[in-house]
Length: 236
Image (tube, rainbow, N blue to C red; front, top):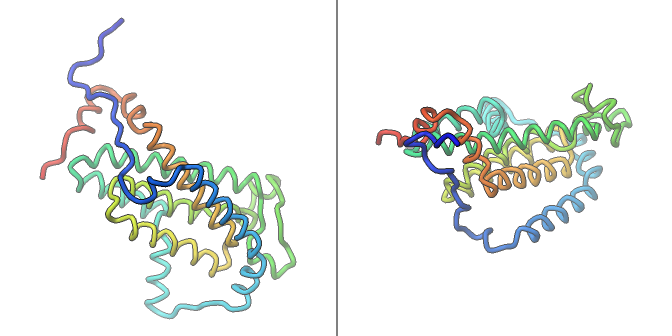
């Protein structure tokens, strides 16, 4: 058997940070997410109709600021944040790859589910349209891609990835993600259950990616020279 290249780091893995939610078994957190989703289903129609009947309009610069905040976790924002991690953290290159893998995984699964369920958007309530219409509509029309919320999934995926490596900022990261979910409901793009499902989906996928050491296995597939560069600390 050919010996491994010299100076190639061992398989990388960074364990979960130590903070309060690590004291709860994983099944309890999954159960809580499921209960929250079921409760949200009950409020879908009332909240959807209320949002349509009571549009919230932000004026001038406030609207621009709110729109900007709603882009947390979307493609441009995520790429910029991941690049910043790679450049600013001494070990940022491998962390950036880990965060990117979690985000990509969450978004891919989310879009597959959106197409499979084909749920009508809340704004279609004005036409009396509500419910699941399956892949026939889900994969062909954005108006039938309500479940789950991709904006929310992307936001919570980025926040979960950042919180894994920078737990001191987790309150800020998750507050930004929660704002995205609330705005998606207020702007008639999603029902509450779409938002909860998107958040739970992202958290499960991102944490599973980290817990199972997928980033380390992924980096290990790179050529030896690339691996050495990824694991080389940035200059302080």
